[in-house]
Image (cartoon, rainbow, N blue to C red; front, top):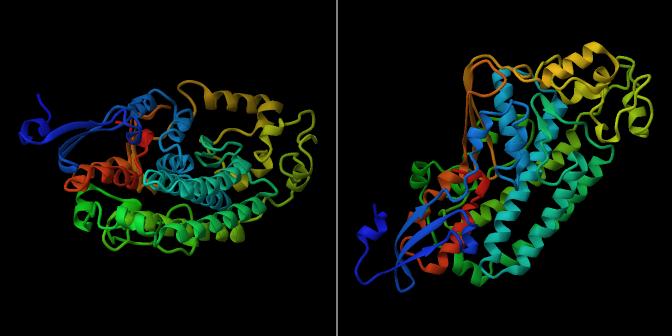
Length: 441
């Protein structure tokens, strides 16, 4: 069967393919265009050129082992993917998360949100010729990724946020690293505002281009900065606060007319609000531990001083486990839960601990939530990132579905570009921030 655009095309129009091999389509999208000169008369979008079968793979992985796959959905802000999945599991398992772990999650997710917006705007501006702005924004992203690496040990695919809490406690010098990242990012955002906000070329390329009304956005299922650019102030962090977001003071920026410029400006303002949240995290972060002896452990303060000191008589933990000692579990992981990896001190020093460790990772054991279904969503870089999980009582999900926000946003691309010029496709597509791994269909 011929595509719709081929059946209905005018005799004097030109039909061309844009993508999937076009550089701006990232190898994942094909747009069939009907042109009158360079004016777009009609457009038809075809997706599915990148499909890794994420949801089907998850059905064959244990609840613990599928966590690294979530990092690779929106690989620019993987920590938010971690959070969406683990909070869905925590809702199913009815876990109470320590406040410090919640604050760590908020801080890292806001760093990820900024890096997501920086990447989106870097690509969008570069594709309009603003290469200097691209370099500035990527420079700012480096400061944030260095801060993330300082805490998690990895820049992108961290798998740091775990079911029940986080992988480990913060590094002793985490606050200084976070403050540096915030300060340097603020400087970059100020420079970008000065370069772009009133730039005549930028305004001509983005103002009144691909205007989307609030009604149209809602009908397509838009969420996140693209929805807020139309004037709808919906943000899950405010509407349905999770992970202690109600403890932080921040605003929800909105646009005026839902064009490409508003999508740029909303992301710029959201980054400023995220920096504001990170600063509050630095101020409000609960202190680590009590310094008391726990199960034969040394005080947390002594653990900080030396990686190689004995933690429990007869054993030494590997340096890469620093921050995840048994004494810290009360700060970073849900207490008394079978969903949490047993502490290594128990695994290495007692037969009971070794059995618990094996049972956690053995097939048909481990995390086994009760039968039922659950949905939970967080505010991702592109909008509502939701996980729907059906449990049949085993250690693997019977069904897992992801509500990928950019899938709904890109669904409106045909309508957004119709009537505009061929050159308008690139910045418009960039303003939607399509991420191939998240878009995976």
